[in-house]
Length: 157
Image (cartoon, rainbow, N blue to C red; front, top):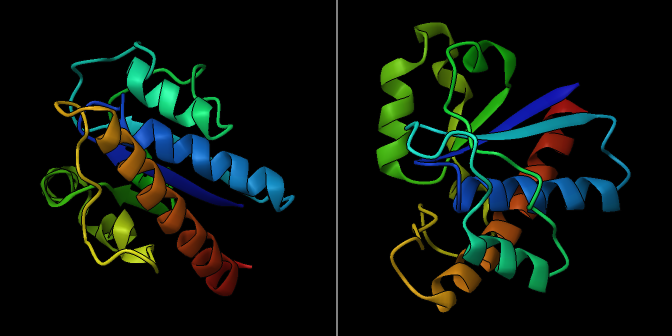
């Protein structure tokens, strides 16, 4: 069983969107029994809250329901539990590197490194922008999710 954790700052925009998109991709490919997913934030600002309404609306527009996800902060146990800990940007990657046990650093990755159709290393934070930012983030997450699944299938199955 492969376990994947998506991580952004507050766990209300990017990482829950990634969790929802990847969950639906796994269901489409009949792989929900082979890969466990979750999302978290490096900070505890929004613990217990649902995803941002704009993230929910964008996901829903694309047929993805993220309304049941609740924000949580990354826990020390996550680094031992998850095989892939995927940061949405460099700042969150640095935060993860600072708190991860040394023997788990190889589990940390920038999520966009798995994207094939976008030339960027970061999923930009859409929080302070408008709806177009959420749409762009959704497309980037779809691309990176496809690449991640292909990577997992080639390495772990």
